[in-house]
Length: 237
Image (cartoon, rainbow, N blue to C red; front, side, top):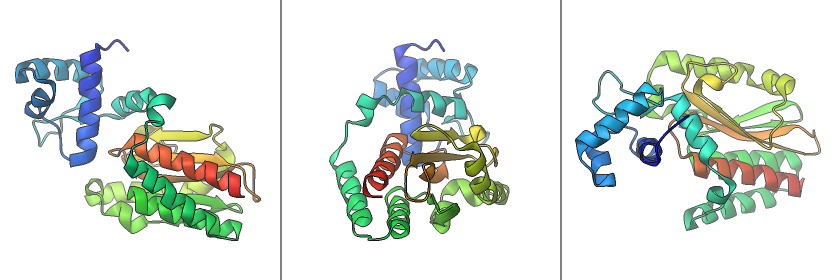
């Protein structure tokens, strides 16, 4: 997809501002960030909208990312950028490691890792333990503003009901797997992202740990934490 550097930066800024504020991002906000006129920003936003990377909710003059916009953003998170870790991530990763290392049993270590991911990301946490799916943080997930719509809640519930058999049959092969919105195998209209890491355990070579949250989230941080959780469990188990 042909984007100018500025268009790419504007798209990524919309994604990051929307993740932080949970509100559509307007041209005035972006004009201040980029030190250009609102008219210039509106022209660039129109191009991004034509490309299907952002959209305008009918209730707002601002823009929000589409699944395609998120996918472009996630694909851009290179290993080098992912390893640019700030102090908050270091503290989170340390807390995760302490929680996992304190457990003497494999199932307890996996549950501890999931519970930590819930606390650190605000998402729903999940893992496979001996062929069963362990879930934690459902109430945390549904406090997100995206899920005030009952139809979306039901769609998430359908995804969760079918997730364990899908994981068993599909066995996603990458160390870190990210399914954004419509990319999800079930619950395509639920507006969630599934981020899971595959790891080897005493139960299976294809064990999984990860989170399920709204498409609006801090992908760099969450992806790093999920990857770290999988790596830690594989080392310990």
